[in-house]
Image (tube, rainbow, N blue to C red):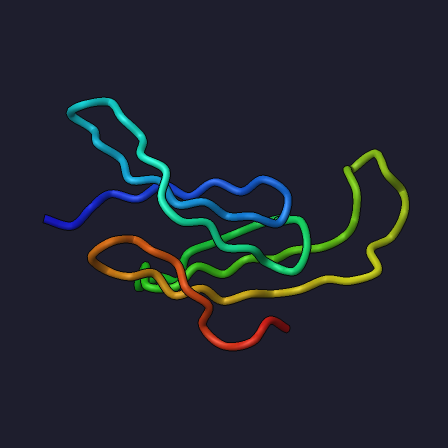
Length: 90
């Protein structure tokens, strides 16, 4: 059976957790960093890639424009849920 993975982002770091639904447990696994703070992430319809938009812009209340914006494609291991870079950041 495939593992159920959960991903969370704080700042520029995305962390994978294994989910044990029956035991109501989260087990922290590996983390991966993207160039700037994560703004948004979405799965490819195949669920084999995760696309992450990141920026150095502050909060919605901060009127300062972003100096850099990035898009990162991450591959998702179909058995473990582990993330790895899929090409270069743009």
